[in-house]
Amino acid sequence: MSEINKSGWKPEMFEERRRGDETFTGNKALMLEEALIFEIGDIHTTGVDFADAPPAASRLGGLERVRNIGLPGLSEPEAVRHYTRLSRQNYGIDLGVFPLGSCTMKHNPRLNEKVARMKGFADVHPLQPVETVQGALGVINELAFWLIDLTGMHGVAMSPKAGAHGELCGILCIRAALEARGEGRKVILVPESAHGTNPATAAFAGFAVEEIPANERGRVDLEALKARLGPDIAGVMITNPNTCGLFEPDMKAISDAVHEAGGYVYCDGANFNAIVGRVRPGDLGIDAMHINLHKTFSTPHGGGGPGSGPVVLSEALSPYGPLPFTERHADGYITLVEEETAGDRHPDSFGRMTAFHGQMGMFTRALSYILSHGADGLKQVAEDAVLNANYVLRNLEHVLDAPFAGSGPCMHEVIFSDNGMADGFSTLDIAKGLIDEGFHPMTVYFPLVVHGAMLVEPTETESKAALDQFIGALRSVAERAKAGDESLKTAPSFAPRRRLDETLAARKPKLVWTEPEPAVAAE
Ligand SMILES: *Cc1c(COP(=O)(O)O)cnc(C)c1O
Image (cartoon, rainbow, N blue to C red; front, top):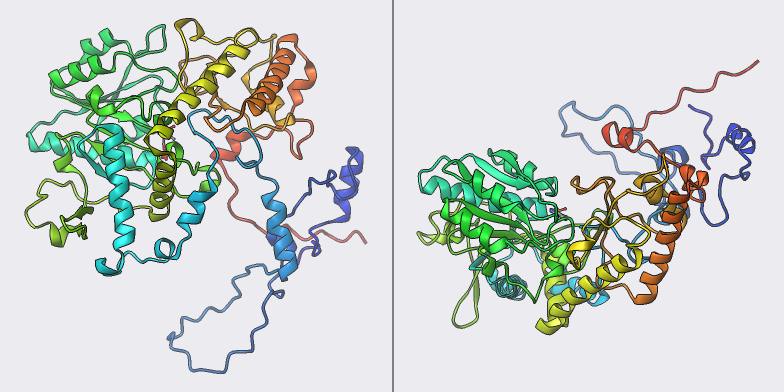
């Protein structure tokens, strides 16, 4: 046994800390340190008191476990404190501005949560007979109609469970459509500024990926794209608005050129909150686009919660979409079109993305968000998202280099570069300085087309007062980086941890706890 006691606290820890001018406990006022559950718990403690099981003959045929599995236990109050302390070490949208570019970390209306928890939605089982789940199927069906209506597309596949999963669904539709034409087109074109999931998806579906360059205005270089089109090009994957926060004004011309050359147009719709209610992707000639319900229609994906990535499809691709889908009959009754019930009506479907129908909880949240905003409210979502980002841009462009500010307003997010920092100072220092100011940093070093990129998405749900405070903090940190303030190099100074080796943490995560070697007694 190691010498670790129940509080996870060892006398040596104090000696180490005192040298670093720290407190006896390691806590800093209300910022509490918390050891791993393996360090504070033990296998003999439990929060529940069961009577011993009566003896029974084993039916395991000699395969009984012979050793304890070593899961640590805590009493109930200890367990409550452990997880409450851990929860306080998190930053979330309910605490403050969360300007993580591309992620749409906006307020999640509580009404959504109330609706998602209604028993008729929360407690249904995917294998229940359809006549007992008409309400839940009605939600899926109505949401599907809204998504088709808002995007001006022909059909929608509701089952993909994340944006990246939706990308795969859309690309598999394209592959199926090409196979049906008997064509072996093998290349997907992806702009330099694309989200990493785009090339990953295309490669995963068996395509070769080639980059399309950006022009000096941060948009797809239309002439370079046209020059590359030909009989080997299966399609393009384009994000619009793109990850520089810019609208692709040539989108229709791009779609026309790709169609002309026999390819398909995939649009990454993760940034749909910038144009919802204002622009219909279907009018831009798009063949497939995923919608991140967990971005555009609230419920941001902080904390690793579930996502949902329905894919809207053009008339050309709809026949290849996955099963199952809902079908509403004239009398209002809804049935499911699945392998057994599809008959000969959906012969070209590429198959299935998920065992059942998708993320029910996300469907109810998204529909409740859509219905509470209405069509006019959704249009205002896009307008406010764009207004807020431009407010940030115009308030900071004199302090931070904004590479595309000259080419007009941005969309829902604004991009800055590390140009103009003092020698040795970079984007990372600014991000870490923001932590001391109590903000989650913006997206950094993405997209790659901008040096030392800082991508800020304020979202439509921030008030002017909240934006002013964020702008003030970012301006102050940026001015320190320009003045070469050395204290910024070690920021964050007020957080429980300073600079971590993030690369090491990502490449070699320590996922298994091993009991430390017992200390050798001195005598
Ligand atoms: C978030 C995002 C994705 C991926 O969506 P997930 O739901 O995280 O899989 C793809 N593209 C862009 C531009 C995004 O912002």
